[in-house]
Length: 157
Image (tube, rainbow, N blue to C red):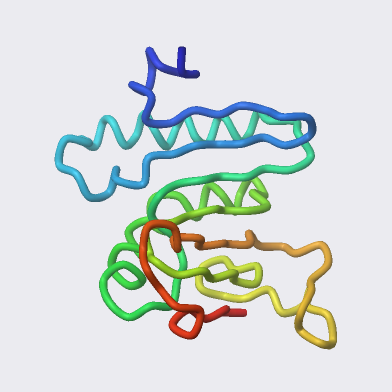
C-alpha cells in the first residue's frame, strides 16, 4: 500500500531512508481544476507539517514539473512560477536541500536558489561548488524519453 493513501489518494507522501527524508508531491495541483482551494490547503498544510516534523539530516523533494529551469516557453516561465508560488516558501522555511524534477526535456542543475535569487555567498572561488548553502538546490533531469543530442542540452550553473 502506498504511504498516506487515505489522506492524499497517493498524490503526495513521504518516507525516510537512513538519514534522508524524501517527499513526493503532485506538481499538477496548480494546473488542474479538480484540485479545489480546500484540497490545496489540505495539501500545503500536510507538506508544511511533514517537513516541520521531520528530524532527518537531509530533505529531498521530488515532483514532475520544475520550480526553476531556463528553457524558453511556458514550462520555465508561467508553469515554473505557479509551482514556486505553491511550494517554494514552505521548502525554504524547512531547509529542503534538493528538489528533483523532470517535465522539461533537458538536464539542468541550479546553484542554490530561492525567490529567484542565487546564494552566491556559498560559492567557491571557481564557482563550481558551494558550502553550507542557505537555499535549495534544484535539479531538472527530464532527458529520459526524448531523443536529444548532447549538443542540444546545456548545463546551467
